[in-house]
Length: 171
Image (cartoon, rainbow, N blue to C red; front, side):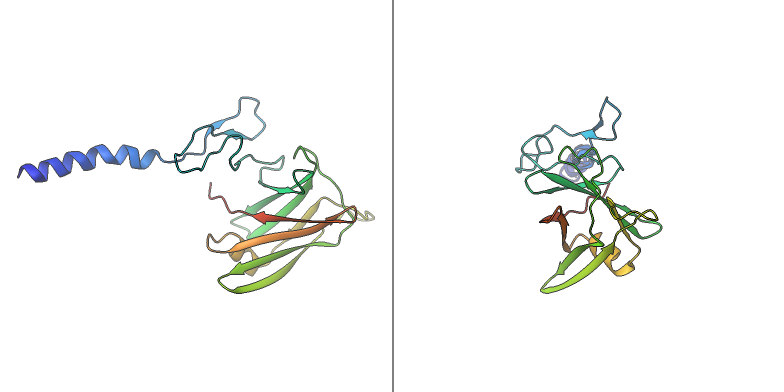
């Protein structure tokens, strides 16, 4: 009987620690949509400087570094409409950078299979450049937002090719 009570007490104590985990961080006091997550997980996974970042771009999406932070690509997913939207951003990840490309390419790998998808540019009438690319491709949406898929984006900015990894963050 004593062992049963001991296990019950240990389980009751373990629940708060299990539920605390890695949270999404504290809102940034500047109100720019970014959140601060300055703790260390003890497994080499940190959110501050030197680790990966969960900062959000100016459109509220996830950021992808391109060319050693020369540019960034912001991506967001609308789970209800099943739409993926990408924005080309400057090195500070604050301003849109219009480019002349007709599409960006997403390569998705699951196990040993790879598939390429083109995400078309969204341009205002008469414009030859844009920073926005969008797709309603249900297959691409399912693959990019799946945890087991690896996705890479390729695009050209001012004649230079760039590539970045798309990481899905469930927030």
